[in-house]
Length: 435
Image 1 (cartoon, rainbow, N blue to C red):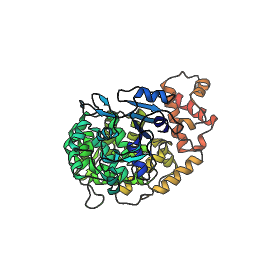
Image 2: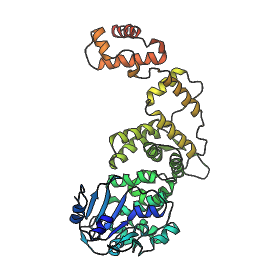
Image 3: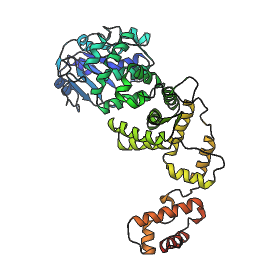
Image 4: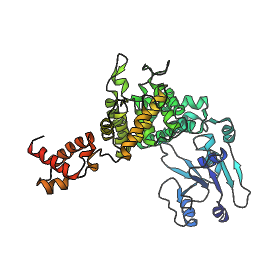
């Protein structure tokens, strides 16, 4: 800001960074607005880049990149997402008038030689004090311009703990069908940021009530009104919201939070006389379809689907140690922590204690098996495929894998079998058909 001002340009801190500062929150990033044209900004900031049509320069700093945008007025929006172009301006007030919500339409700074001051033409600071999210100007026009603002509103309400001003909330509902124009990436980015809130259910319930959820995730919207035997007086959607909040209250990873949102997505399609047979299998497939539409990374899709597919596991204290080892092998040792976190959230979402049904006992037994170095899968065997080829004269191919899997079964049942000599002897017997 000082560099811009020293070179004859106005400079202001704007947007979410200033909003968060005024709320006492740590800003996630920094945004400046200036009357300098992009090429002038780039010339003043070595290493910066300006490769977009909206007048934004990305300036590197020790604390991360700063976005510096020339004052602008947007032209007509043609795709319910971005303006067809921008016109650069000279006044910060005109730039603030194009922004989404009053709490994001505050600026702090000034022209060269002036004392920095706050510019707040829409009473954004008053809305911060009131903890109110209100659109700048006509809310219907704001959401018609950019349909993503509807999702951003419910996400900000959840993250900041704000109410949405009634006229703004009504306009979100009216504009909800426009969300069909949003890309999967943009929808997913807002949902994942919403799930990182302290109480994601605030935004999720707004999404349901406004009709947004039916546009961006119709199978989730079908949960409203589906009865189940969980917390008295609550339906399946209430359970999902409770589960997501429980995941957020703990140390759940983003993957677990996403799985908590989708863990019962298969129930409406499988309801049968108060039961939901196979909902975890159907739900895993439906979650894959949704997450692919949201263009999530392949690893994220696979991990979330895996958690949903396995979240209905049952445990009994009578399990043998071999049964515990089989459970580890089925779930995967690198997935256990997330699965336990999801089950805890699901339990709390059902109005129960997090560790019911022996969950802590199972976790302790799993930890003991892992600490003991028990062989759970092929990687734990004392031999590998190369040994089978060298010692038994086998040729590479599917047969090698099948033999290794059978050896794993024997070692899981009896860890003392996991010795090179015994395994090779067993493998010879398998090949000869004696066992």
